[in-house]
Length: 316
Image (cartoon, rainbow, N blue to C red; front, side, top):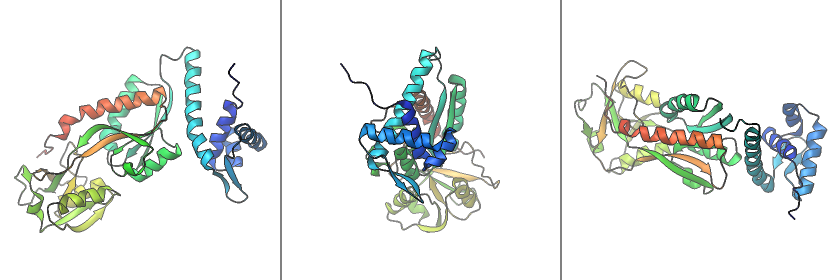
């Protein structure tokens, strides 16, 4: 006979809330119960599992132990599964409902999220999408801490986190942008060596900056980086004002910038590596049915972008 489980879903819920809040007091306020109830539930959970889940600090609240960090991931997954079982038992299993929190690399958001929200609203209106826009390293940390279910990101810096699984849904090739007044503006393609003497505008995001600089240095050119910015659209506007050229991956449907001037996109003749657009997940963590439905929608959207990725997006 299988022995009964010694802990309860309520204990797990209190534990997860305390881990997210960082203190028993804040967890009790969020749960709208007495602090003693939260403390007692977590103490009983630790006793049942025979592990210490938190280090208690007088002034700094709670810190998860290594055992606590492992349980946090498992508890979130178990609680999500329990909600699905409850919904199915109540007869609402035919439609997916509830929150899904995804991370998205900042420069990918304008290209994928609008289509995702539209498709999700049409096909799964009960799903509540929450998005965390961040850089690759921040997304990896959010995955490890359980703050997001999965991440849509470039495969940059993710290999440094071996616990992550990455599924490629799209590929983005690098291309050059120059101002419309540039001497090469009537061309369709360019070699980076032809821009060797000109200043470069760099999209200065972690890992992205290394990728773009490596593309230029691989041709034997030391890039003359005059301007740096973490804003994708600011890069385009600086180029449109004649302040240099830049190398990017994602292509807007229009060549016009926020500043009103145009850039001209040119294909790269140089042999260069593309960037994989991936869905990153914690390896071994089972996704909820609603999270999996959102992932499936992103795969469809990734497949549908391929014709756009190869098209010259020049509107003048």
